[in-house]
Length: 459
Ligand SMILES: C[S@@+](CC[C@H](N)C(=O)[O-])C[C@H]1O[C@@H](n2cnc3c(N)ncnc32)[C@H](O)[C@@H]1O
Image (cartoon, rainbow, N blue to C red):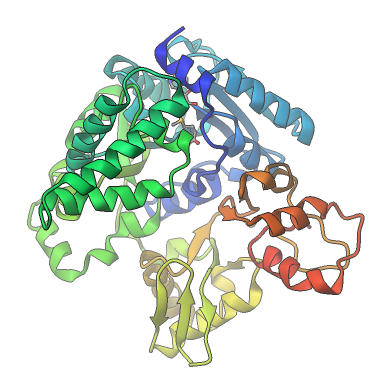
């Protein structure tokens, strides 16, 4: 048994979904690049290194006509995935205990392949194999998401990792993690005051406070943890027969958030994609990438023509304030949009929630609406997908998404938009009861309304 398998068998990776790995979202970004991709409703999906299967199960539940296969080298995690599948009765998901390096060549062809949280944490020869497996099993018009740790953002993290590993030594996972946490706290205290080292350690220390023990054990304290420069990843993927399409979220790929000056500086670097992207990582001190890849035979067009958006479904997580044109974003605080046409689009999307709206049905001049949507999406104020996954609004006897009910004790549950939603113990207790058999009490109305807005209720 490999050390990697032993470590995941000993302490499972937290049950979580990765929003960007939803085929409906991958397909939306692919369409913006002029790449049609398969219909997510009937797609064949492979999740490599699926852990306890939460991501794969949620994908299967959101698209019952699709088929989803999850594979992992950890038998303990695959058993947990199979048990959850059985409990929930998800007929279109399947899990297999297999090392990706041993995947049979006739394992099948997939329209969407997900390899999230894997590439950085496997030895070099397995990485090469992973890229080859993706290239081999991806359908001709398929799209794959591969995430990886990137330089230069990991330069300092690797130093802190070294410090924590040396302090923790070989021990049971809980002792390793406890000693590593202590070592990091000590290092913050002992670093010279006002030094760059202390500043950086303090930042990491604050970040790690929110990590569960399993996160820390499998992330910074992993047995293998090898960040790469983008140009290295790009070259290895090219050799395997894969082409880089863009990042897995539209804001990361469209670069509007970089601002005009920085975008112009990137353009000056010319047509060498790897050089431009590597420079961008340096500019942003980026530590992580989640990239969309296609087979090398596909052409990619990054002009983001607005017309490509018209058949996409769009939604927002912004909320209105009392001031016209001013909105609150859960992640970015207050946002002011002085252009009335933008506000009209957002107000329509907020009124439609929890449903998404087909872009071409939004009010206003169609060309202007689509043009504005590219900007709103690029700044992260709206999100878009191919097709609609229906979420229910408040009703007398609501039904909560069954995977959310199963996982509510973990404090983080998946919703019907394939996002993670944090729930406190009170919300978790209520969510567990919402199986459609009971009426909502007056005192529970506000919480259930929140669940509906968060996409946690099933039609
Ligand atoms: C960091 S976890 C990520 C789990 C999941 N993809 C997620 O994002 O939540 C990495 C997973 O890859 C699995 N893994 C590592 N090496 C593997 C291999 N050679 N073949 C298949 N799975 C592997 C581990 O067992 C573990 O479950």
